[in-house]
Image 1 (cartoon, rainbow, N blue to C red):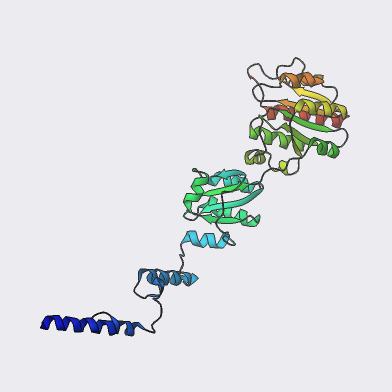
Image 2 (image 1 turned 120 degrees about the horizontal axis):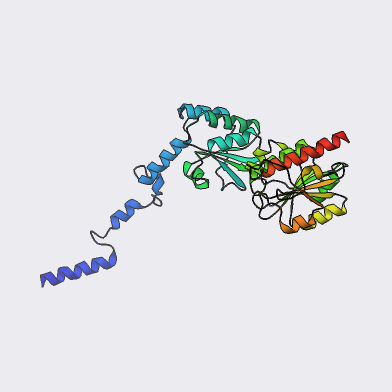
Length: 330
């Protein structure tokens, strides 16, 4: 049949080479054009448009950046932008007033962190200038990062260095005769601690001792309350105050405890000219039982019957003043 003969011819032709419509000609057209370009190299591809926008942003002139008052102030007071970092280590001081007060007192710090969207008022501007003057690193960060460190930061956070404590042995080596050392038995208010450190420095004490546990530490609040005295006064943490009192006695110190419940008043202290360790009790409970038993003398400060007790830092100041005056007369 005619139809069959034409079909056989078609089959014979297909064995010799590609027939019409199989793409043979198109294959020749594509030869020599190489591999398909990357998406970012195709002008109309979305990836290429993103690449072009990124390159344009990277090469943008500094003159096109924001010249708002906030940006101008930050540029004037900040020497450089530190790279994005982890959460600051150590104690954190947050809030515009708290940060400014800490910087004014030159509290040792490691970093000032400022939110990029912060409104620069007088407190922020002064904080930036003080940080720059102190050579403190200043880092701008997203507000979310700053608020993640402290929700009440008001856009500014100061990281404080851990306090470098001394030791009882170092304090005794530093002490001049007649030695005067202050020991704290459970003082928990950092402001009281700072005020005691300030009084100890004012009346010539060789150092201040405190326990490691259940007591205030040298935080930013304590440092501020010391009015800078913490930078000059050796402060030591001890694990066991009773053993430290024993060591003080072996070193020749007369141990005097302050306790409002004592029947002996400060006028009974006749050993002011001798080497002394003054032991101060906690704000609420006073001296612990064992500490009281270790003292050579326990005294109180007479006050009006209408007043329940004296603040621990006030009582310490009075006792140190009494010792200082007695030594001056001697």
